[in-house]
Image 1 (tube, rainbow, N blue to C red):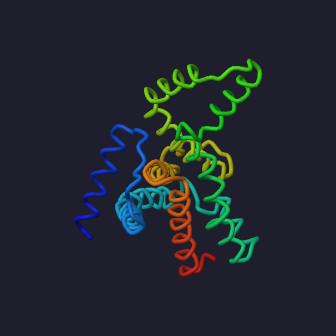
Image 2 (cartoon, rainbow, N blue to C red):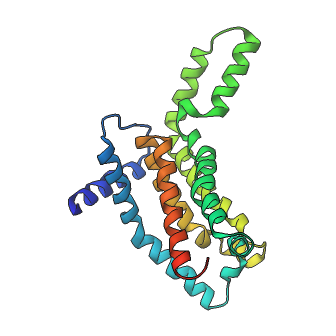
Image 3 (tube, rainbow, N blue to C red):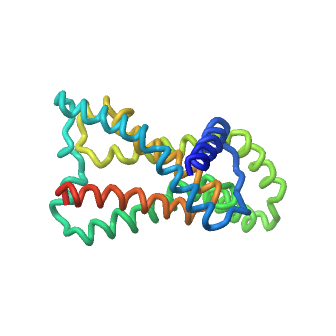
Length: 216
C-alpha cells in the first residue's frame, strides 16, 4: 500500500504542476477506491499543519472557533440533519458548482452560450467551439486553480465579518483550498461522481470526529 501511496502522490503532484484534462478510462473500481484513499492519506499531514496554525492563532486570541457559522448550526439542528446536510447535500451542491465546470464539455457557461448562439444564428458553432477549446486548453491551469481558490474563499462566508477574519482569510481557507485541489484532481481523473464521494467521505470523517469529541 505504501508503494501505491507514493505512486498516487507522484501522479497528483505531476498533475498539479501542470493541470490538464485527461480522464482515466481504464481504472477499475478497486483502483479508484485505492487512489481516493491514498489521496486522503496524502493530504492529512498538511491539513494537520494548517489546523495547528489555526489553533495557534486561536490561542493568541486572533480568532475563535465560535465565530464559525457551523457552530451555530450544530446548536440549532439535531445530529441526523447535520449529517444529511454536510455529508450528502453539501458535497452534491458544491461539486456541481465548483467541479462540474472544470471539464470543457460540462461547462454550462460555454455550452449554454453556444446553444443560444446556435438558436439565434441558426448555424452550428463548430468553429467557435474549436476556438474556445484552444483558449480553454491554454488557460486551463488558471481555470483549475481558480476553481479551487474560489471553493476555499466561499467558506469565509461561514464566519462573522470582521477585519481580523478578512486579514486571516488566506490562512483560514487554506485547508479548503487544499481539499479543492484534490477534489479537482479526482474529478478530472475519475469523474464528478468520484469527487462527490470523496467530498462526502471527508465531511463524514469530520462529522464523526466532532461527534466523538462531543461537539455534536
